[in-house]
Length: 298
Image (cartoon, rainbow, N blue to C red):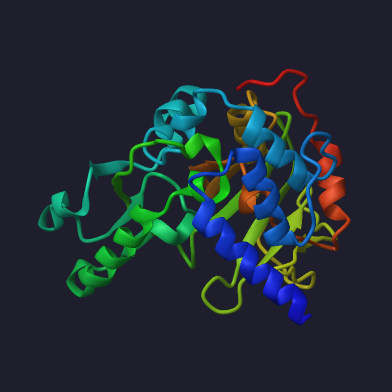
């Protein structure tokens, strides 16, 4: 165990120091080993995580830059499925100093546009008690993140970093988030996160809303937990498949607020393709669902 910990620590230090200089494929191999403790087969991938590494290297459509930008992606979604699914944009700024705090409404959401999941999200539910100092600290930290350098997710390479203000969506008791895993344009399963601020878990379900016997090793499922399955689930699946039709794999994140469907984001590499599954053999099962393109686009 000591040897593993030492190797893991040295590996992490090496990756941090050499990241700007290593070619993508070599970097990904070492990073994958660092995260999962095994070497990936990128040239002939079989598992889901391995195939996501292949897509990072060999599926590089120029439009992906737009689709990982939380603001720019809205035009793509509007053209695909309609304006009614878009959370309204209040404003965008190129830097924090440009934010006009006094002009913002009583409730709003701020996001950095260049990725990072929830790390760059700030929610203001009441302007009178909003902690602007903490918000600025969080946004500054997020703006420094570079997903391309850290995980070689090519769509993020060189995209502009901005701050987006969106309308706050009032929900009761909370705004439910559904993440649809689309393989070659078809939804095979979806994920629901719960207990984010208490004890974070996630359950996976099939197209019919039946719970599946697997989850994520670092976000364990709770198979006894009864979570709400929307009555309009099949409408959500149809929307997800429309948005996913042009890609080998994408996770389409949608909100459902008492039946109202809203677009969240497109995620091409969940957990950067380095997330362990529980049980472990589901990495292979998900990999079987994903048919890679015959032709590389680089």
